[in-house]
Image 1: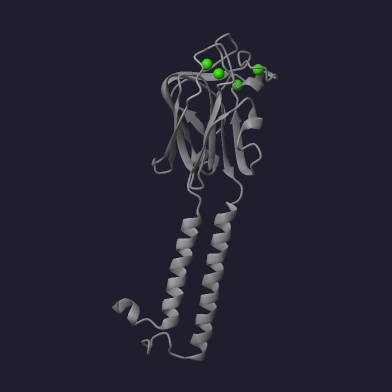
Image 2: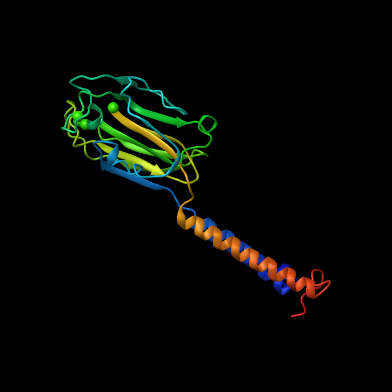
Length: 241
Ligand SMILES: [Ca+2]
Ligand SMILES: [Ca+2]
Ligand SMILES: [Ca+2]
Ligand SMILES: [Ca+2]
């Protein structure tokens, strides 16, 4: 190819190294990870429980309000303790197989929880919610451009609406590029423990790949400038080889 042929060898190497470095970093960026459905009786069961976050919010609805920052819901309402209420089990202080003494969030059809980058500073990288009752749900998550990050299907519904908790499941997603919204869809659904955070540090694999790419490029640039210093005019000369 003409474009490559006329480049001095060291410039060609520098460009190839830069391209390879960028490709390595892009390939190492973690794709989305869908999490669940997994049993959930308290926040101790959350895959985000031991995570490190710049911000993290957990909405348990126990104050009777949907008032966590930077998130809005398209439909649904908070419901208080009652024989048909199905809070996360531990919210009433006892993991005892019953969620009737806690509070939860109830509705039907599709509910969309939308995150505000303006309020939060940036979109969350980790989002989860706990389905506690209703029909088996579909969970879906979306990136900043509203592309789907994938779906998860529930299979644990027990057919009872009296606060049983063995069926309760966590549904979530991790995505370093940011999550703009999630949806839960079922004819009727009850959910709890909406949780979302911004991971505090890059994933180790991605950071290592990025550091390697930067080091490679730095090495090539240093060699190139050493060569240029020793060979005046090398930059504009056609390759002799
Ligand atoms: Ca309980
Ligand atoms: Ca609750
Ligand atoms: Ca339940
Ligand atoms: Ca049930």
